[in-house]
Image (tube, rainbow, N blue to C red; front, side, top):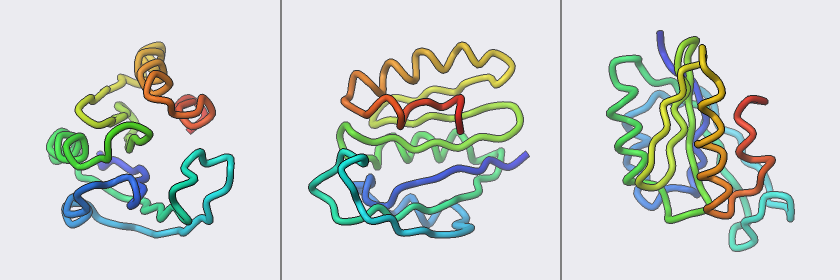
Length: 122
């Protein structure tokens, strides 16, 4: 089953990874204080679809493509949820969502606001 998720274009140091995913839709948000990225004027949020057989490959590419700190990308299907940080990948089995604890703690340690890493609400 294919994965769906969101990649924020401004989070990418290397945007070429966007050529490897199917972009379903794009939404541009004006940055507010809540976003905690005052150096940016906007977030370009791409809703993407990733084939099951490419999920691991894309996670590795994203992990290398993300800007240092402050960012993650994620995508999931009915079985697994990939949470990808710069140089760190979490693959959460949705049958055992307690595993989100480590992905959340890691994101918070990078300075990502708590509300942005509450993956159980996604």
